[in-house]
Length: 133
Image (cartoon, rainbow, N blue to C red; front, side, top):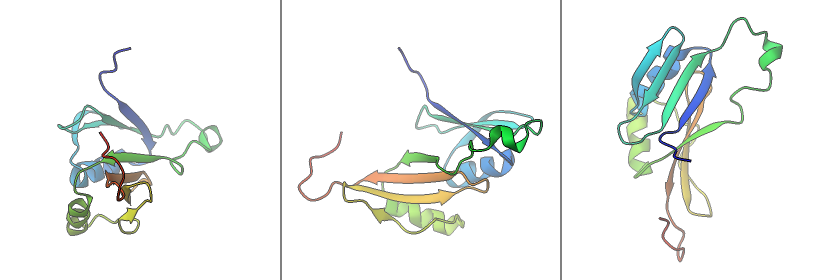
């Protein structure tokens, strides 16, 4: 298998609101768009995010349990502290402050206007831990 890119597809109520969040605060740009659909990409990674409008023809029962409540889109970054400061200046609302996990991961969570949880992480090894490659 030769994987050339990774795309996360999210179904949201308001495609434009999520697109604005990802382009304004997280450095993505729109590379494709159509009615009810946007594909986003960053120049420094091959990962893509596809945002699709929820199909109004489907009844709520048909998609119950398929929401975003347990999904977190994780982006690994460098200098999480600087990113947190930048996001606060831009008015993005974090779901708390930077949290340090015992295994060496620092994380910060944001939520977009459609409830998509975005987790920014940075690996900060605990004292005595080997470097991560």
